[in-house]
Image 1 (cartoon, helix red, strand yellow):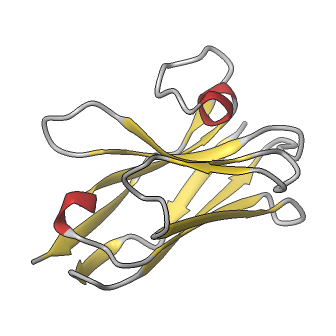
Image 2: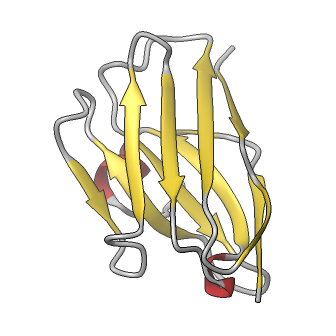
Length: 125
């Protein structure tokens, strides 16, 4: 049974940093893109960042470029999101994804994708 477990969320002040982790288990994920999405209250889920299966290619939403960094460790089946210079607009539940959503940067629900349960990030002003 595949499981994605996010951690590292919390409350931080404007300008602060957080590092999210997503540990995958129950399968082999080194051949798939991994990524992060977020959903703020009353808004649609949106793409944040993605990383290719090898880790050699990364891509970001314009709103987080230069502030967030995605990386992965295939030996640990884990993807990370380093978030710096946080602001209140970054407040959301952050979700980890393995599969086509991460590969395409689309928040669509693809049949064979896996999603984590989400971790809350709150940035106070």
